[in-house]
Image (cartoon, helix red, strand yellow):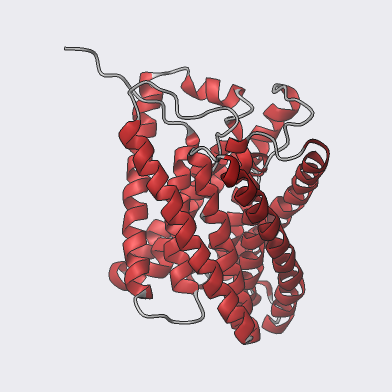
Length: 360
């Protein structure tokens, strides 16, 4: 009997968990209650749970079989940034569990989310510090190497800020105050790092154009920190006031004054990324796990627009959230179909992370 061959499982496989979880969360958050939304949310929550278990088990088997894989991935500047994906996968599924499954699971949903939030936040902070340190001291990249993938290690604290806000109602006293302060601090840390990296990506695009076709979907990753930041300040405005001794009105004003301009830039970038993607698709856009960038980043715009709609009562924002949710479903369908076909066609032992396309 031939020996069992272990297929490599790099960290970007957790993008499947992220992209599926955000559909469940987005369906729950929509300000317009459409028929079938609850069933859709439950379905995607269940699918995300299966994807999370599969990704964790496959990763454990892979790393146990190849003891040098983790070191090799971290040493590779094309792969290392995607260690933000496992952290965000844990955080995204925890949040989906809390908002979708709590009616069924009760306090167990809160406990599971708390565990996943602590694990995801610890891992996310480690990647937010560790991967840039590697980039600044060990990795060697070309002058035109900047990509949306560079955002991956610094976005997890923003996801922690948004999902941590959902846990605030279940805390009180010093624990609630500490959580609220930590969420705002992580919002600032991730947001400022994202601004620095987005400007580098804009400069690279202006000077060196879009680059390899397989890496074009990574442009959509920029939407992640933008949409998630709007979501974070919106959720914190709803939950952080009592913990911080600040009026809800003041926090909601901040959420609007920040959220509306940030959403405006996110829509601008969405139009740019969609245009470049469409142009590339006409010439040939090869499938890779980068296609999952069409899901989670768009999903954060859904939750961000839904939060703005709830705070303003604006009908236009209601339908913006619905339109973005439709785009999210389309993106998930494209990514999931491509992934299923790729898995069926995969030969054991063939690497699944092309250097130029190792992306969410």
